Image 1 (cartoon, rainbow, N blue to C red):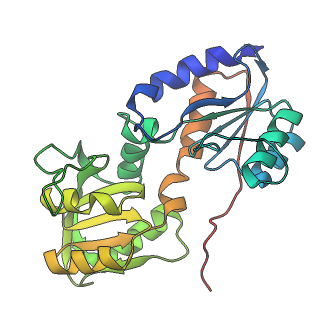
Image 2 (image 1 turned 180 degrees about the horizontal axis):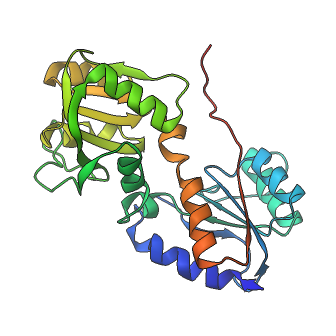
Image 3 (image 1 turned 30 degrees about the vertical axis):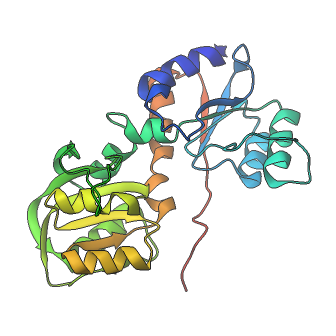
Length: 266
């Protein structure tokens, strides 16, 4: 039988908690390091649906990307969404470990996974000179830059992103006839890194959760944008975690969430 503290030790090697952003909340959020683990459920979000599925499958541990708890809880009751989910975890003796920005920042983590998923080569982080915003402010530099083996039209690249990530729909800004080869990206919600992508010399920036002002700015500075979705650019963690547990803890059963994106298209 595997002990949870041993699992946490290995997960910390993949995504050290010291890499997390100051506002973030990662690590073991619910549970006991001494708990014995036999089945793990992996997912992007700890939702009521995922906890129910984990409980029905007899999972002892949920490992997710997004933290269930961001702000300090003043109460844990069924009267709030977060409280009811925490109660369900405790009632079913399921521990919860979350990775988030530690994994986003880590070498080989979320953004490297996304870059490889999109078929990029020569992958690197944004450098400090690139991480400067419109008004001279410092940016986090959480994304990556890479190149396609051969240049393609922006239209063909969008189709490639859609197929690689299984997106039902994609939002974009730019000229479909443009040739693109250098690609910047940031998984999840990466609008704040737009200028880092621009300063990197990228032909296109791939991320999620883009807003009107991001499109306006990109149009002004001549940067093509692809909004592939927050869920779609990060749900790739599930396959990564399944492989991680298969390699490090082959004695554990691993179940991958079948959750669908929250936003869909007709």
